[in-house]
Structures are given as structure tokens and as C-alpha cells.
Length: 178
Image 1 (cartoon, one colour):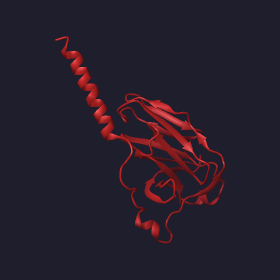
Image 2: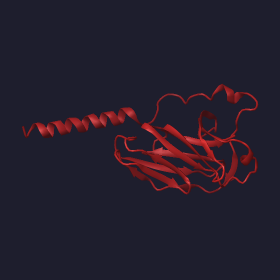
Image 3: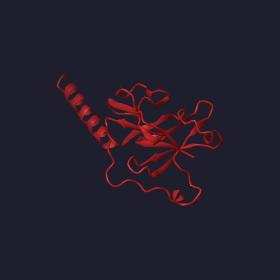
Image 4: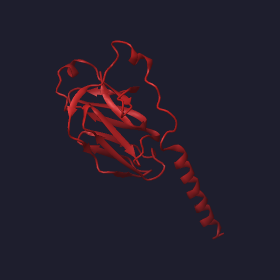
């Protein structure tokens, strides 16, 4: 009997590693194409709020059975318990850019799939443009190099605090648009 317990534990560890590697990590293949509605006039566009400063959170270790919040200023990601299968390093970056964009990385991967949705809040308070107060804003998953808008993530806009919150099952690069 004593010999079976370590064998069972080894099998469970191997199964966990296989599940982790199969369920998250970099996507293969090409990037998804932009939705067709972005090609028409009147389509949303990324909000321009230039900054020359890059802000980056410290890499934060997220554990499978613990809810975690990783933030830089008022931009954050809330990861519920069970969203990752193994300890995962999460980093949030607000890059120097002419757009109000963020990059969220898990284990320094460009893309990452969670086991359940996470909540991302983007602080756009550096945008002092008055047209933002009048127009509804939304978050878009973007191509980091071309700034092409790939997928509308929606979001709940808190205009009083100039933050927008959305839920997603994957991490990548996101930008605020209207």
C-alpha cells in the first residue's frame, strides 16, 4: 500500500502538468482578423491619450486556489480562484503609447487562456479629452504591433472614475476605443 501512494501522487502531478500545458500558453497560427464592421465609416477608433511613460506592475505569482489582484495604479486584473491550473506569474503594463492601451502577460507569454473568466479594469484617467465624457467607451483586443482592432471586449464604463471594466478568458493587449 505505501508504494501506491507515491505512484498515485506522481500520476496526479504528471496529469496536472499535461493539463496545464494543454490549456494555456501561446496560441499558434495567425492572429484573428479584425471584425468587418471596423472597415466601415463610423466604426470605433482607439482613443488617443499619449504618454511617454511606461508603467509596469511587479510580476505577481497567482496560485490556483487563491483569488489574486495584480495592478499598476488603477489598472488591474482580478483572477478568481481556479482560473489557473498551476502557479502563474502575471504582469500588467501600461506602455508608452499614443493610445490608451495595456498589455497583460501570464508567464511572459503573448497570449494566455484562463480556466474561467478574469476581470480587467483599465484606468483611462490620463485622458483629459472632453469627448470621452460624452461618448460611450469600450475595450478592444488589439494587435500590439499594428494597433488593429481584433475583438470588441465591451466593458462597463465608470465615467466618474474614468475606468472601464470587462471580463475575458484570455490575456493579450487591449485598448480603449469609442
